[in-house]
Amino acid sequence: MIRKLLNRLRKHKYPNRFLKFYHLNKKRLNNERRSLYDEKRKKGICVRCNDKAVSGIVFCSYHQKKQKKYNRIARS
Image (cartoon, rainbow, N blue to C red):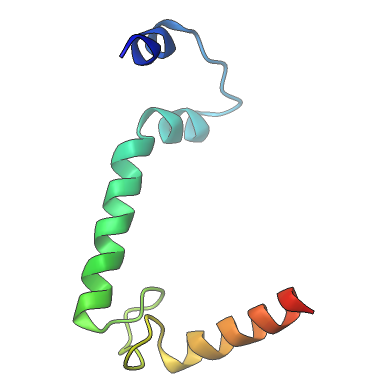
């Protein structure tokens, strides 16, 4: 609690207004992102493009192919 108070009192220098907004609203933004991801997953919608997802996976067939390609490159 004391650490939280000291962080609020400390003056931060942000290089731009977008980073400032992100850091000041980080907790709320992350909660929104997580809840939207969970909603889409439960409805069976691709979490990237809102198309129908492949059963048991959070991506549609297009994004699943892209993810497999990305993983293959990253692991080699």
